[in-house]
Amino acid sequence: MLIVYADTIVSSGRPPLETLGEFMHRHIGGAFGRLHVLPFFPSSSDDGFAVIDYRRVDHRLGNWENVRTLTERYDTMFDLVINHCSRESPWFADFIGGREPGRHYFITLPEESDTSAVVRPRTTPLVSAVHTYGGIRHVWNTFSDDQIDLDFANPAVLREYVDILFFYVAQGARLIRLDAIAFLWKRLGTSCMSLPETHAVVKILRLLLDYARADVCLMTETNVPHEENVSYFGDGDEAQMVYQFSLSPLLLYSYAFGDASYLTAWAASLAPPPDGCAYANMFASHDGIGLRPLEGLVPEREVARLVERMRERGGFVTLRQASRREPGDGLKPYEINIAPFSAFGGRSENLRAYLAAHTLLVSFQGAPAIYIHGLLATPNDLDLVEVTGRTRSINRGQWQLSDLEKRLADPSSDQAKALDHFKRILALRSAQEAFNTTAQQRVLPSPKGAFVMRREGKSQTILVIASVLDRTQHLPRTGLEIDPGICVDLLSGSDVAAADGIDLSPHQVLWLDVSG
Image (cartoon, rainbow, N blue to C red; front, side, top):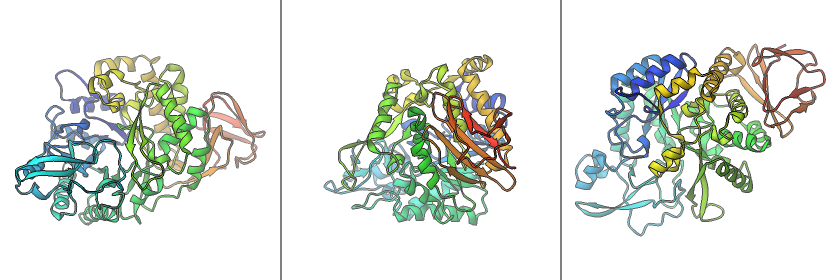
């Protein structure tokens, strides 16, 4: 899956959605079968995630015909921004005016309510005072005072979103991403995270899609600790796909410090997804690299060390307010904002390690999801941060199509090298039975400077070996579960002799076919 904003790639005088289609046709081809176009609806903030009207395409981006052109070429994912809507939405205007249908769509609280148990993703106030025709009301806004949370205890709200869901299906969506779903249901005195009622809503949406025989996959976006995250598979009756959010910061830590021990321990503990379900594996997206998924996996001192390393490479860290039920108090690091290539240094000499990390990423059980700026090795956009005042803008810049194509035409550019690498490894991956989403994954013990796992299909076994060190290292054959003879590295096409173990060059990744 390729993740992209509708206006990441632009050209003068043409709708960005049309330009995106042209870029995909010219330069991506069949490398990706799925396309996640981030919210393309009229919005008042947060780069599309404060939706004003869920049923219209933002006229600055194009129209539904442009969207349907993409859905005809790719299995396309739409966002259902379900937890909140824009302060400028017609529903909230109804709330202000005391009119139907929106007058009861939002959560209001008495001013003195105790919300200290709520787990927050931000440091901004959880509740905002709003002047309505009926007086001042206090509304719940998890993310910002422009993104007002909806009240799913009102069945009319769920009915509204079911209607939107099936509208998207009618427009050609093959995947639906439930944005910020973990925050959906609120009950004071609890964390208000992933409550049973939230899971019930996901089950209802899945049940309705199944009942309608809609060939649509639900994906949940829950940037939370691992066990909570994978709970959205349910018993195979909730989301069919769940992001492996812990994978991204664990990979980053491994390559930043040449230590894959935390990655190895986590990956060795993973349970396979339920039948008919799959993980989505990504290194970066339009958001930053979440740090909550490291809770319980990496000590806080090491998380702080990672944050400091990313600051040295031009990144930022956003904070969240801890709830009273969490250990410690005050502010906690929530997310690293940095372009994925800059997280590795952002220079041509860092490209080898950067591409190696992504080669390891696509080796994991599940479906790879690559963000457009990761695909193109785009560095930090500090100018855009200065313009918008938002640290997330560091990884949300635009390419002029003509400028990008000049870079891609130059085989020595970082962009051309990165795109060629991704296209090559994804094509190679898709041809291997051992990398099917149903193929088994087994992690082997290894020195901290390396990561080793076996991907085992019915007729093929691939031994994945990755060095996270910037120097050569030797792995003894003991523990690798490999015969002493010759095997083929699928990535290089070279024969590898393993009689005395395996020598790895800096940041080398091997896909050894050991099917026997």
